[in-house]
Length: 404
Figure 1 (cartoon, rainbow, N blue to C red):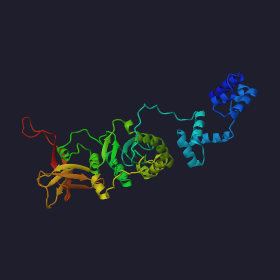
Figure 2: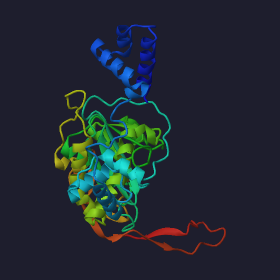
Figure 3: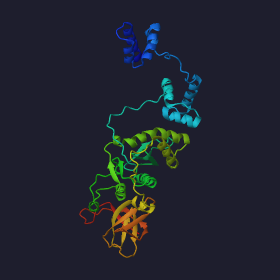
């Protein structure tokens, strides 16, 4: 019997011994006096056992037939072994038309000892409140995993998720590189606009611990990676996290994807990064329908998205080079000739070399684009014989030899 039923038995014994009245017992039980009379009548005729719920121990009229239960478990073992109850119930309904509630399926799997093992208990941490505005902060993270379950090597899934709403975008690449970070940021900007801030980990793709150069000090931005420089130009504040748990929103989404996305890619027969990227927008939209929520504030903090040509010039790699006496610069093993033009930089001046994501190389001086021509030759190095001891020439084993 339950605690409530045992308490009723005690009160009815007190009524029988005339310690309390039936009205007082009814008030103690929290029922009306009429209901108290019914309970007293049952107690007098059947004793304390009669106060137990009459349906206890009976089979429910809504109980699933044993044959149906065995059919569901056989379907689960044949196709979805290892799936969690929630995902399995969704897939059974969408793929086979079998409707079973996730908690019912959970009970079936537990009784049949088919429930996947639970992950290790997490450490207790204090919850951080969501941002109130859509676009106030976007969390970006790369998740390395066997996304194709042995059909390919490990890949990195770049995930961007809004802190206020849980809306997300995804992009898969071989590694968590600057190009992958540029790609997911561009997708977000083209879809929603420029966010106020980005929450990332401390990988050298996003932040750096080196000393700022003189040019960076003059600019006042501090030491920046290429990704950090692009965010600085867009007015996006980069917030580095001190632990993976600090980025709880995106880390939990990674956990969901490592379960759901892997199984979805397997069911669809997707085995390459390109095939996965073609389907990720659809899968992200499905996750948003399930997990996204309305922000606390209706104000959208995204700023207006730049033009595509402006994004090309911002999401790129930049380095500085010195102009040689023959008005050439070297960049990534190639020689670029600065053509005759007005306001051309003199030798020794520093120019900015910008490589766009499509591979286009541009040279700028004081913010103006220069006309350059890539020469046919490339910088090569040859081994030279070191001079005798006491010689005046350099003994370094590598020396530049061939130019255009």
